[in-house]
Length: 91
Image (cartoon, rainbow, N blue to C red; front, side, top):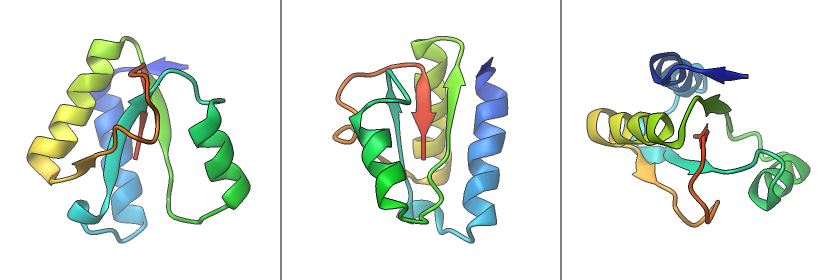
């Protein structure tokens, strides 16, 4: 289910707070498909690292979320985890 970029920002920031994370220790990125190789590997490894992802309405909205988290919270951009940009935002 797609949600607005404001809601995604709130949820992602909440997830990081819940995991007692330091902003700069987290990465953010986008992906086309939550069933893709990156997500499959992550679920199978069960890393317990707080992975969260949400689907934005558009790829542009997803990029707004990434830009906010990078600019205002200091997250690093992870462009290697999911090679194709998409509507799915993950931290």
